Length: 171
Length: 277
Image 1 (cartoon, rainbow over the protein chains, first blue to last red):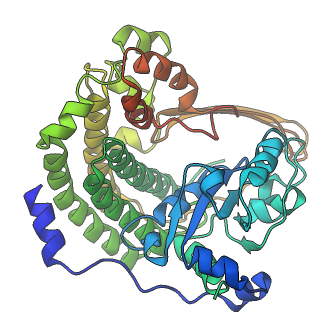
Image 2: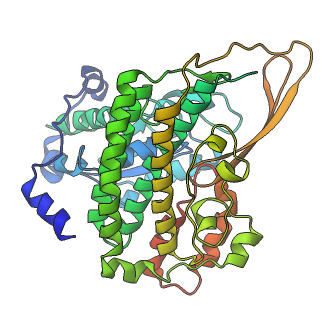
Image 3: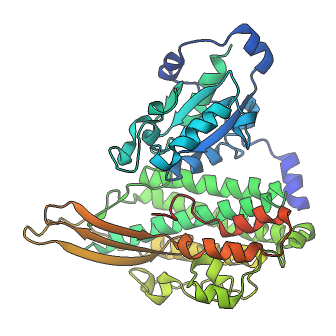
C-alpha cells in the first residue's frame, strides 16, 4: 500500500482538462438561474441518477465520470443516493412502462429548483427501443427535460460537456 | 454462413477486452464497498485505459455494434495492435501490484474473507456460471466446456476456488484477468489475416432458428432466436448469467451483518437490466 501512497504523492495528477461545453447544449438550456437560487446552490449540484429502463450502457459511462481522468467532483457535482438530496436528475433509458411511475415519483420527490438531464439516445427518443410495446419512449414524454445529452452511450467527455454547460448557465 | 477466421479472432479479442475492463471495474467496486477506495481509484485507471484503447482500435469505448452477422464491422489496424500490446504489457505490470494491494491489506481481508458464503451444493443446484459459480467449486466455462471458436485453439487457465466467499469471488476475477491477458496476447500474435465479414443472404422461402451459448464476463449467456423468412426476428430468448446468480445472492447474505450487504451484492454484480429479459 505504501508504494501506491508514495506514487500518489510524487506523481502529478492524471485528471484531464475540462472540456468546453457545446454551443448546442448552452442554447438548449437557454436560461440562467435566478440570483437567490444561485446564492443558495453556488456551483455545487447534487445529482440523482435514474435508470428508467436503460441497458446500463449509459450507467457505465456515468460511473466513469468518477474516475481520476474525469474527476466530476472538481466541478462541485456529486452523485447522491436519494432524489430528496438532489438538484439534478440524470435520467437514462427509453422509460419502460414499468418505470414510468417510479420516474414520476422521483421527479415529484426532488425539491425545487430542479433540472432534468436526459442521457443517451434512448432517453432522447426511445432509441433502438422506439415503438416497443414495453416502452413509453423519450423521457420528455414523462417529465420536463432541460437538457439532452445524445450518444449510445455518450462518452464521459460528452457527459462532462453537458454537465459543465448546466453549471455554467447558472452563473 | 461462414464467418471468416479473422473475424472470429477479433470477436474474441473484443470479448476479452470487455472482460478485462469489467473485471477491473468489479474488483475496484467491491473494495470500495469495504471503504477501500484506493483500490477502486487504481482499478478504474486500468478500466479507463482499456476503454480508451477499445475506442481507438474499434471506434467505440464499449465496442457496441462492432459485431455484425457474418463477421465484424471494423478491422484491427497494425498500429492499434501495437497499442494493444503496449496496454497488455502495462496491465501485466499493474496486475501483481493490485493483487498485492488487495491481498496484503489485512483490514480489507477482514471484510472479505468468510463474508457472503455460497455453498458448492447451492451453486451446483442453480447451475450457476461465471465467477460466482467458479468461486463455489464449479468449473463450467463456455470457453472451455464448449470451446467455441477460437477458444479451442487458445491456451489459458480459468480461475477456480471452493471457498465461496466474497474474497474467493475477487480472487477468481484476478485469475480471469490473468487468463484474458494470456488470451489477448495469443490473439494479437496469431490472428489470421484476411477478410473480416462474409456476404450472406436470407433464405427466401423458410424461417431459421438457432441457439448459442457464449461466456460473457458474468458467465454463460444463452441466446435462442427465430428469424422469419422476410428477415424479421419472430421470437427471441436471451438468458443472462444473472438469472442463476440473483437467487444465490439471497443465500449469500444470510447471517451477514447489514454493512456487508453491499459487499456481497457487489461481489456478485448481477445485471440489473438483463435479468428479466
